[in-house]
Image (cartoon, rainbow, N blue to C red; front, side):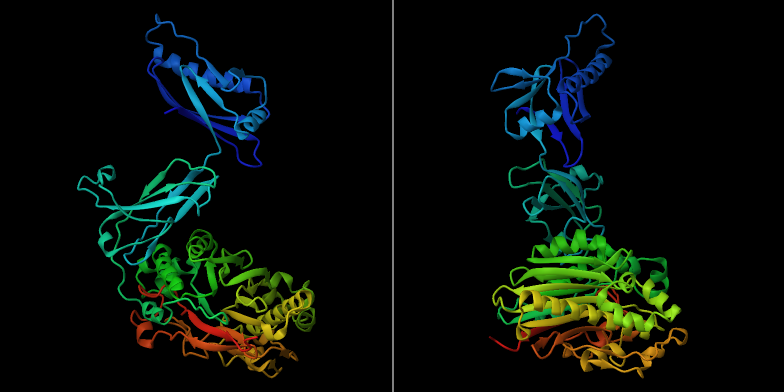
Length: 568
C-alpha cells in the first residue's frame, strides 16, 4: 500500500494542515510529522521547511555514527502524468490541482506519498457513562469533519473485560450496526465498543473506535411509560389524523445540582438524576409514543444537538430549538417529515420584545406604567416557538404549532396570565399573516398550542384559552400586591379545548402536584380521536414522587391523537 499524506483545509481558514507518518530503516526514522502552512506560501518554501524538520530528525538518530555520511534528504511534489516536479506555486494553487484530481505525489526520501485532501475524519467520539439493557445507546459526543453522520457507518461490539483489566485483551463479538444500538439483556456485565467509519457522498475516512468506560447494567424493569406505549404501538396512517405530544423533560441544568439532589429531589437516587441515565429513559419514552408532532420544554441545548436531533432524525423526525433568552435550555418542536412539510419557523423571547413588537403594543401600553411589574415581566426569559406545517397527504391542511414554557414563581399568576395574553397576540398575528400571505382557508388551518403553562385550570390562562375572555376581576391579577394589574382584560378569537382535559396531575413533585401542562387545540377545526392514559397515582408515588429511576422528569408527557373535522 502506498503511503498517505493528509492535507486538510477548513472552509474560511487561511492555513492548510499537512500530516504524514515517515518510517525509513535506511534513515533510522519512524515519526509522524505535522505542519501548518499559509495558503499563500510558495510550495518550495513549504518543502524546505519539511526537509529541514526531517533532516533534524535524521541527524538525531545518526549522530552517534558520525562517520556514516547521510544521503541528502529529498522532499518534492511530483506530477505523475507529466512526469515532472511541481514547483513555484502557492499552496492554494496546489490544492486546486489536487481538487481537480491531478495525480500529484509527495516524494520523501525513498517513498511516494499519495495526497489525501479533506478526507472524512472523526474528530471526537465518546460513549455515555450509563448504559442500560433495554434502552438505546449511541455516541454521547460525535464530531466529524468532511463527513455526514447519516452516510457514516457504525458497528457495535460487546466484550467482557478480562481479569487483567486490560481493554486490549477484550474479545469482541459484533452485536449491531447503525448510529444507535438497543442494549440487550445479554450485554449486561459487558463493555460495548463502537467503530465509526466517517463517510461523505464521495469517500470514506479512517475508522475510529471507542470502548465504553462502564459496563452495561440491567435496566430499571418495567417503566410506567412502557404501559402507556401499549396505546401507541403504531404510527397513525389515516391522512386526517395525527398524534401530538407535549413533554417538559426536566433540564439537566435543574436536575443535577446540589440543591436538586439534596432538597428538590432528595428522595431520588443520584444516579437517576444524572443526565446520562435520564436521557436513555426520556428518549425511549418519546420514541415509543410514535408521535407526528412533538413539543418539548426544558431542553438543554447540548441535549437537543447531541441526543434528540441525532436519534429522532433516525425516525424521520426533524426539529428546531428556541433558547429561553440567555439560559442554556429552551423549547424544541419536532415533526414527522413523511407527514408534514415545514413552511416556516418563528420564535420570540417575550421580555426583550415587549417594547418593540407591534403586536404587543396595545397590552404593553396598559401595564408599562407599573414599574415593578414592567421590570419583572421584561426580566423573564420566557419564549414561544411557532412552526407552520403543511400536510403532505392532504396539502390544503395546515397547522400552526405553538410551544411555550411560562414563568414558574408561586406569586406570579399575573405574570403568567400576561404571558398568555402576549402569546395569543403573537400567535394571532402569525396566524393572520399566514392566512393572508398564503391564502389559507380557516376550515383547513388550525392552531395547536402546547406547553408547560405553570398554570392550573382554575387560573386565568385556562379561561383565556377555553372561554376566550378574562375580565379585570380575575384573581390572578392580584397575585402580587405591588405588581397588581388593574383595569386589564384579555381576549382571543379562537375556540380552544384541552385535548387531554384537566387530569389531576401533569407535574408531581414532593412539594407541588397539579395539572399545568396542556395541549390546546382549535375545536371548531379539529377533534380529539383518543388520548394516552396517564400513569396512576400509585405509579407516580412508587419512589415518593418524580423524577425517579423509572420516570425521567418531574412532568408527565401528554399524548393525544387529533383529527380534522372537515374531510374536504
